[in-house]
Length: 107
Image (cartoon, rainbow, N blue to C red; front, side, top):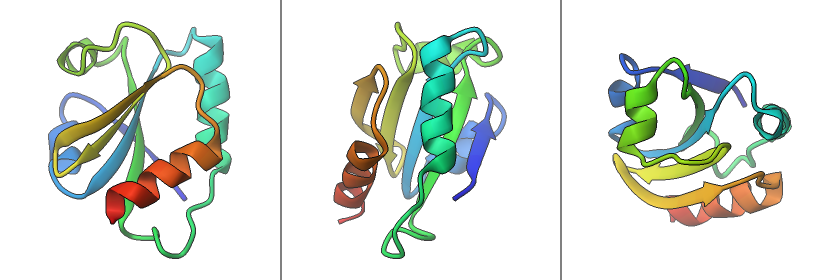
């Protein structure tokens, strides 16, 4: 799985349709680096391949996106379906938890 990088210019093109998991993070955040490593190693099961996208938004580079999703602590992960947030998770999340939430969102 490839983790994409989104910013203010590319976010709307990606997040308006389908299921997208977005990791709001910052380069100076230790837990964010741990969450990034989890996402990088996470492997999608065949049932999710091509049905979900996973991306990251650097809050220092795209503060308006962070404000739009009311990010107050990082890491914050937002699960979107057809452009609408369906779940917000604050703090470090395990891969199995994220995969379960992605599977449920695709149903």
